[in-house]
Length: 239
Image 1 (cartoon, rainbow, N blue to C red):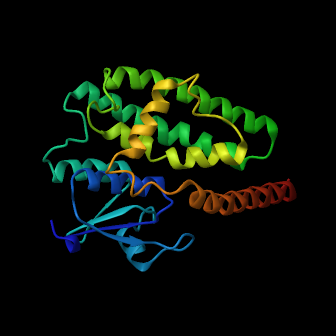
Image 2 (cartoon, rainbow, N blue to C red; image 1 turned 180 degrees about the vertical axis):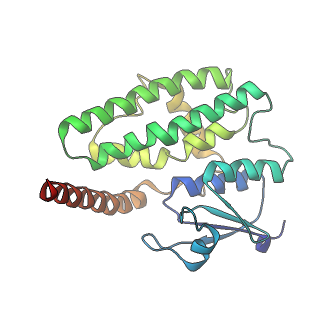
Image 3 (cartoon, rainbow, N blue to C red; image 1 turned 180 degrees about the horizontal axis):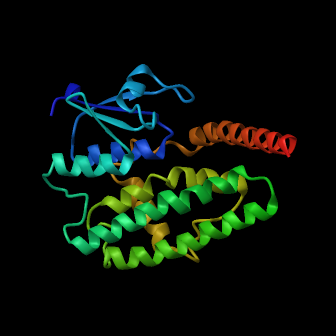
């Protein structure tokens, strides 16, 4: 596949963009990475994803495919040669999709909350949700991996990508808050898996450096806190 036929709209800090990049790397698909400037939206992005106006967007023969997990599934179906990303067994496939949805809908928002919220009670609640989630994912890893190195078995699979893309931001959250969330004493299998995942050839070149991501994260956290404070002030004025 020629590079000009496959383009990816994204930004290097985005874990959701990373999902598409890892999937393309796993399939050895050449692509052009079109970097969006954080905080702004290019005309191509708005044209390609007029509904959500968000990255990532995969452009395949100029046909846009949006939403990170949908993109991963699309890549797996279009470039169907090994390695397969989605499990072949229907139940295993459903299980992987369940945990991927949990990560996006529950776990990752809670992890963002740890760094962003300033009220101690809210921060404690978010931390508890993240640690409980990691315990659940530890159990899921044991069941899904069946004693092999990855959620997907011998190779990185759908759930590995869905979860592994958040590891850089998990490290940043730990550094910002001085919390040890990925604790070997509590989730030893996940800790070992995270090391294997980050060292994988399809991942290591697209996983952001922690220090670089940390600097970007500080800006994002400050922006989100300011927005939350402004919203609270507006609500107080309205009431």
